[in-house]
Amino acid sequence: MPVPSLATRLGLPSALAALIFGAAAPAQAETAASTPFAPMTLAHDLGETVLEHRPERVAALGMNDLDFLDSLGVPVAGIPKDFVPHFLSAYADDPQIRDLGFIVKPNIEQIYALQPDLVLMSPLQAEHYKEISSFAPVLYFDVDYRNSATGHLDAVKDHFLTLGKIFGKEEAAREGVAALDRQVARLRDEIADRPEKALILLYNNGAFRSFGPRSRYGFVFSDLGVTPAGEASETELHGRPVTSEFIEAADPDILFIIDRTAVMEHRPVLTRDQIANPLLESTPAWANDRVIFVDPEAWYVTAAGPTSLSIIIDELREGYRRR
Image 1 (tube, rainbow, N blue to C red):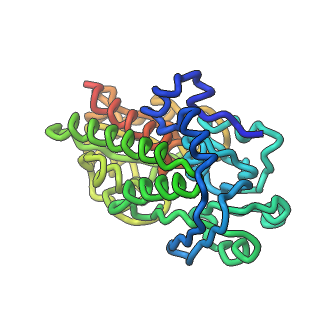
Image 2 (cartoon, one colour):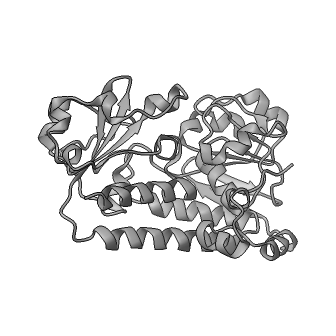
């Protein structure tokens, strides 16, 4: 039983859904279903994927791929259900969608039992590519989670269009890409001449890590136009450990804080009072109420899908609008 798309769950008219999410209207869906499928070979970083027919039983091992499929109105047969973001929660709650284990350690036996005719995989599951591709076609999402400074949005848009081609949703995918381009252009126009410098921090069990221009969130600076504060630029997946002294010295005008602990422990996002100390309170960001506790599921669990990127862009805009 297909899970309704986010747009459908929000009750949006099809035309508005297409504008915002790139979702296909009913007429488009009918056209897609009747479009003949031409066998295709898709090259990616881990190899080649050969599809002889349009996939009908799809396993999405990463939440970004689930986000793409949701936006395109494509049903899924199985997903890992350990860390499904709130904007895709209907998939976790649907008993007809098989639980495929964990995002970082999928259950290979469950995937095999599902008998998928396409498995969508991210770098988090790359070590299982050879094993899974021995019994099902596997398409790998070529996105760099260690250093997204170059090509991040291009990879997202290319993957969107590729999935649109596979599932006969090409028009919906093009609309989704165009919507993302408009959101990016609007943000860049709004902040182009702004002097503020921002720091992206990951909070985890009382400690902070910082992400600079060459990091997991490098695209925020290179593609979205945010000016960085501080000097952190390591390409570690979880950022560079930093102290409150580092944050004070970076003197950020805006702080974007990702609460990893909230994700891992399934608890509410922390508040200003829970992390307050004299060093943080001395920053312009704190003094001017420009400390943004972002949606950690959009930033940490996904960050490379259409819905999550829309949330990220909106939260970046919020940081600049607080003044």
